[in-house]
Image 1 (cartoon, helix red, strand yellow):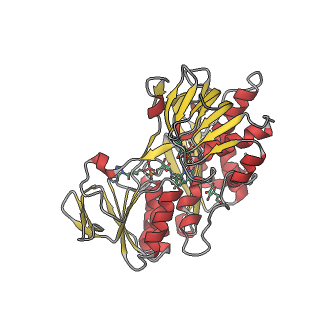
Image 2: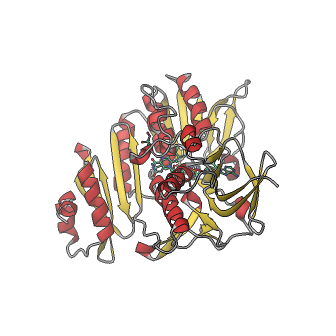
Image 3: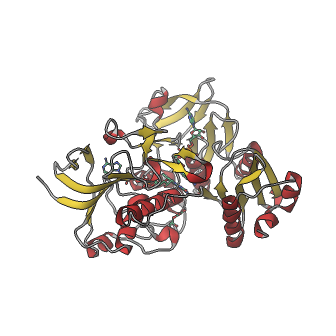
Length: 426
Ligand code: FAD
Ligand code: NAD
Ligand code: ISD
């Protein structure tokens, strides 16, 4: 039998870092907490990997972006964990979990026992092979989920200046990596099946603004189609992307962002699952009372909208982690998680934030030409979601307030006319 801890966090990403900080804030004794991660470094702010990390100049590198600098809190380096008596097991994969025995087995063949487990395993990238694409084992095809991926992408980008990249996928990774590639002097073609980018959130009108901006930066969009094959050269390096209709796009490198799958495999058959993730209650507790789940992997009750969701964004990872720790440490005072969805992105000199829900009718406001515009979503007479490009700190704060309040809207045209002033006046 190996070691035993009061609390174990399975996974060492964003949620793990914010959970560790909360445990320390709430005063756990040294020796109580163990974090097990298959990554080589202490938890870091994953969003930096597709933004500051990929910049051609002044790029951020660890230790600068360890959690929890993303919210302006302490920077938790490996030393911080040591100083607080937290066992941080790096380069260690958990290969099985036995919820009945309350033990985990690691790739180092150590059995670790826990009283309380927090599952913070995040997600893995979907690979093109899973869509039936052939030739995907060629060199210079990159995915982006962790520091290792980002490091390889930076090396390839730097040796490819003036060359051609094809970006597969028009979601967050696709759009942020395309911007980084352009900034690094690489010519970019984007290929995705939808009729517009960031289809999970953007309306066609919002997407047109970003696509036009990218087009002016030289990006070529190939929409409404998917790829079928990669061609490689005699050295096994990717040479071209071949689309379903036979179009051949020459490529020196390819970046793929076609979505993720939550890392639930170790818990399947042991915990109740929902929406592709681990079902939790308002305390982030799973169907087993000694197990909590947080971040990308958790399907949680979204109190504001009365439904269950799984969110793949950093703000929820941070807050759900802190909430689980609060629930574990102070069950008597813990309330149900009452989350306001918050997403954002930054590309080139653009920056947007969104709060709430993108359901119902979308009303655009502001001036797209001046790069300062926004949108409200109105569902069954209520303002439920708010988006703003190029806002100030106080304007974004006002968006959060309006999305939380969900005021009734009598005249949608008046609301669109008022624009950001409506949120600021609340
Ligand atoms: P993760 O941060 O992915 O952490 C999971 C950890 O568990 C990883 O370290 C993983 O290696 C480890 N792990 C998994 N299985 C095991 C195992 N069996 N044994 C040991 N360790 C294991 N969201 C935003 O809102 N805004 C952004 O700008 C943004 N940018 C992003 C940029 C990139 C490149 C990526 C990949 C994501 C971005 N996100 C962004 C999403 C955000 O980072 C995630 O929602 C967040 O990281 C989820 O936190 P998590 O702790 O659930 O998972
Ligand atoms: P995503 O869900 O944002 O986008 C997936 C995209 O894959 C879709 O938009 C679609 O265009 C594309 N796609 C699906 N099937 C395809 C196919 N067969 N061929 C080509 N394209 C196909 O996922 P992502 O962009 O891969 O991002 C991965 C994760 O990282 C997500 O959880 C995302 O939320 C997170 N992330 C978030 C941010 C942010 O919030 N700013 C930034 C980066 C990453
Ligand atoms: O939320 C974030 C984000 O977008 C980043 O780039 O956290 C990181 C840090 O701010 C990086 O230092």
